[in-house]
Amino acid sequence: MTDECFKHPRLAAIYDPLDPDRGDLDGYIRMAEEFGARRVLDIGCGTGVFALLLADRGIEVVGVDPAQASVDVARGKPGSGRVRWICGDATALPPLRVDLATMTANVAQAIADPRTWRKTLRGVYEALRPGGHLVFETRDPAERAWEEWNREDSYGVTEIPGVGAVESWVELIEVSEPLVTFRSTYVFAADGQVLTSDSTLRFRERQEVETELAAQGYAVEDVREAPDRPGKEFVFVARRP
Image (cartoon, rainbow, N blue to C red; front, side):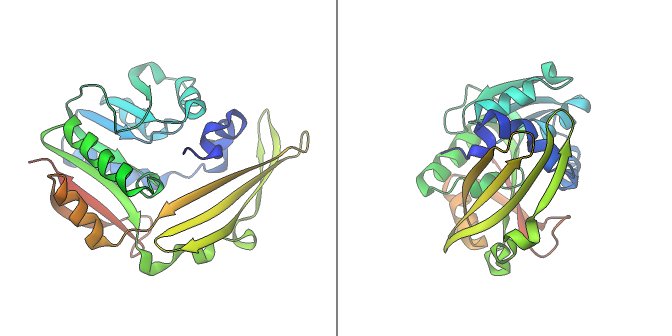
C-alpha cells in the first residue's frame, strides 16, 4: 500500500518544500561515482529529487515509484525528460541492465511485507548487470528512532509559494516490533483542509538483512554508516556476482 503523503496529489505537490534538506543523498551520489555507475535504477524515486541529481551528472536513470501523484510531480520538473519514469515497483520491472540500484531514505523500510521485500530484492537482482551494486539504508532498531516521532518534536509551519502556510507534524500510532506505525498530519491554512497519512516501517536487524540478501544471490560487500545519521543507520552495499 502506498502512503497518502505520496499518492494524494495535494500532498505529493508539497512533499519537497516540507523536506527541503536532502543532504542524505550526498552519500549516494558519492557511491555512484565510486562504482563508476553510468546507468542507475532509483527505486522508490518519489518526486524525483535523487534521479534528477544523477541525470544532472550525465547518468542514465530509471526512476520507479508506485505512487502516480509523486511520479507526476517528478515528470513536471525541469530536466525530467532525461529520466525514464515508471509508475510501478521493483517486483515487476521491464528488462533492464543497470550498474547501480538504490533505495534512499525510508524506501527499504517502507517495504514492510516480507514476501514483497524478497520479491523486490529478486527483481532488483535481475535488473543489475553482473558486478552491479544495490545500495540502500535502514535504521538500526537498537536506536529506537520512533521515540522521537511525536507532535512536540516534529511540529512546524511551512510557507509554500502558491499554496500558503501548511502546518505539519508526526505522531506515533503503534510499536509492534519490527513494525512501527506513525501518522503525519497536514493542515492547509488557505482552506482549512486537514489531510493525514499513515505509514508503517519495518525495522530489520543487520543480520536479518544480510541473510535475506545472500538468499537472493547477492554478495554483501560492506555495511556502512549513513553520513547524515552516524551510528543510527546501516547502509548496505550488495553486489550481484
